[in-house]
Each structure stands twice: as structure tokens, then as C-alpha cells.
Image (tube, rainbow, N blue to C red; front, side, top):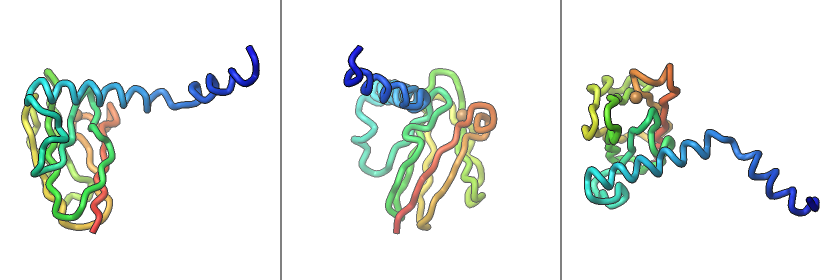
Length: 133
Ligand SMILES: [Cu+2]
């Protein structure tokens, strides 16, 4: 193999496998959302949608303007999840069963790390909302 052809192959190998995996899971999550709700999650106008699927938040990082409502939607088939803000500003949500949702409106600028109560420790199910003024 010529060295010029080796370089792209090496670049591909250096991409972290988890990033790829998360992208695949989030694409699958979006397919599930469309299947359940009949429209794309980006078509929602009154909230920013975060999907919960296979122990991932999709997207896992989201930047919103202060005053934005974030709606978490469980698009899993069997697993329940929750949303718990790390700063303790809100009580942990109820367990969301498949197709259930919870909404939080973010008024205060700053980073808001959050996690899924039952899965953050074992599955690293953690997300981040950055609230801009
Ligand atoms: Cu979970």
C-alpha cells in the first residue's frame, strides 16, 4: 500500500469507537421517535427534544437559550429512565416508561449536567444542557 493511501485509513482508526456507536444509537432513536410520533423530533416547535434510548441521551449535549423548555422522550421499547439535574434544582423526574415524557424549562444561564437516576452509574447515562443568556 502506498503511504498516501494509508493516511485516511489511520485517521478512520483514530476516531473513538464510542462516538460512532453513540451516533448510530441516536440515529436509531430518531427513527423510533418518527415511528411513535409520526414526525421528526426537530419538527417540535415548543420545546427542544432529547431522546432517551439504549442508555443514551440523544443528543447528549445540547445548547439552548434561557427560557427554553427541554422535553425528554423515552423512545425505548422496555426500559424506563429518569431525568435528574445534578445541581438539585429540581426533584428527580418520575420513571419515564416508553413513550412518556418530562419537560424542564431552563431559565438560568450556565451548564446543567443531568443524569438518568437508574443508569448513570452502571451505563454512564449522563447528559449536559448548556443554557445561554
Ligand atoms: Cu436510563
